[in-house]
Length: 397
Ligand code: ADP
Image (cartoon, rainbow, N blue to C red):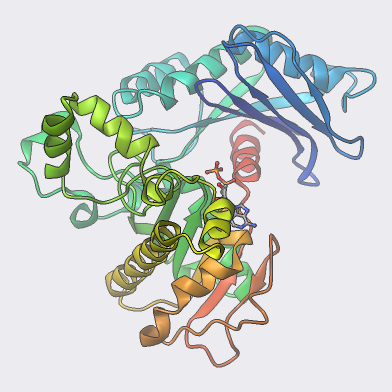
């Protein structure tokens, strides 16, 4: 069966067409600047990369263009849309309602809409994508795969904030966690690499991309994760601050005469490594280059980043009463051997030792710890689209 995977952002849309029997990606691509002007990158497997700038006034037009590309005589990979068996959608926030992926019904759409209060930018974009696909492919079944679902196994002690109970009881304010699809995929792959059952392992997954989170996976279930009600909590990220004293919000608001949401915008978009480095970049490659040229703020930003990741690893080692494996994934986790070393320098106390030679790996799955390391360190490429395709097939077959 061929599955179309759609990941809608507010002005972008990523897609993959996956043959679920072989798990091969037949085509993938990215629509950007939706609602502004429109830019498309389409990559049919084995045929190269095609860039164009078709007008994309809205998501429905963008999805229409994607479907045309997939069935095009030259750059397409299927003869007609009849070959697509189902569509899988990434939905960011499923609240407490969604503990696993599900077939999209009108009731599901309503519930996802209710969760938009916690993800005001992401959930509406996901819903627009679902509705556009339903209009263009009315006979196909659609599946929703939630970023939060994997973390619904967290115990109360891990998800409650230390604030008056009524905010949880009445408003659902608690820690939800994100990147669940990635953490689930990578923990399962880690177990496979170790030749063990995931049920017998304590694994810490470090998803280090532009957004970043760490999850404690005990026996295949998330028992704690660093992101919270929103993706702002936890690690220092590309542009997000991660954990901080909430009193800072009032301080900046008063000092700069800003509203709470303006300050939150600073914490989400102007902070993290970008902010700490004095505005150099949110991309670690640029910040590392600045450090190499002697920029002190860049150096401090990278130090703070690695230190925060290591602190979470320490916390989750305690939370699980020990750790068998630590897996690094996503853009930075998979590719940046230097940052992996910087993080692992703190881990001697738990018996984890990185092997500098094995660590020379970029984008491939590999064990990167020494043979005598008590904790196995690994690089595991994540594949959220494949997870979405697998769930979609499982629910629609
Ligand atoms: P997201 O999906 O959250 O947008 P990715 O997982 O694609 O992010 O990660 C993107 C980030 O990974 C980049 O911003 C960059 O900081 C980092 N990255 C990618 N490749 C490298 C590399 N070779 N060295 C250092 N950092 C890298």
